[in-house]
Amino acid sequence: MSQCSVPVITIDGPGGSGKGTITQMVARKLGWHLLDSGALYRLTALAAARQGVQFDDEAGLVRVAASLDVSFEPTPPGEPAKVILGGEDVTDEIRTERCGDNASKVAVIPAVREALLQRQRDFRQPPGLVADGRDMGTVVFPDAPTKIFLTASAEERAQRRYSQLKDAGLSVNIDALLEEIRARDERDMNRSAAPLKPAEDAQVIDSTGLSIEEVLDRVMAASGQA
Ligand code: DC
Image (tube, rainbow, N blue to C red; front, side):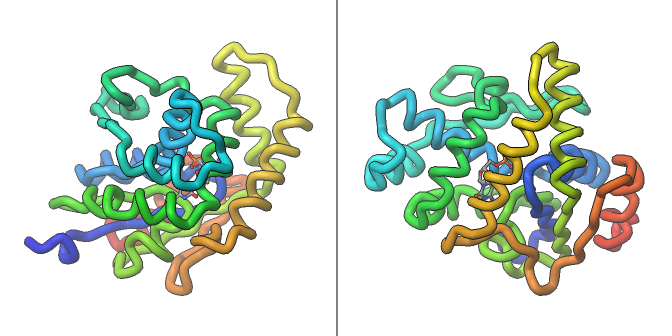
């Protein structure tokens, strides 16, 4: 089977829209592979910081992105995949707000995106792939038969993130979270390389006020897999 004939469901959207959870649920339901493309940008930011590469050193960042020694290890259902960087488990470390913010900064550089492109396409393996990101439907898998763009209001996304962090025992300020979410949206939507926007043929689903099960039903229906 050639790679292009393997079906892909792309799930793009801003952080906190629920796309990570939905991508996992859809992949599990269908028994398909999963690509968490945001993790690759987070890993690039983390590896750069560890190697002392500055965020304005384009050539250095491209080198880091191209040589990422990363593997994703399956975990029990409901848990995010374990992320191993150079033999070390960095699953929790790449999920911090700081790492997300740094990822958004390295992601504005076109050459970094280019360096990660083939690595992302290589996840397209039978029987199918569910790909989570910002530009899955527009750039990485433009031929995907099903493209979803998941949104939610910034307020609702801040509230969801607040609850997640609180459950994890962290003390956070919701106004500061909302500010960060707005700043990151602004950067992700207004960069010239692969900005966050729905593909022309994407189906837009607004998850504000919907339960995760309701969103899952809509995505499965949209993909013709319900
Ligand atoms: O989905 P996430 O929060 O893990 O992504 C972290 C950052 O990586 C996000 O702010 C923008 C960037 N990103 C991107 O530019 N393109 C993608 N396909 C995925 C993430």
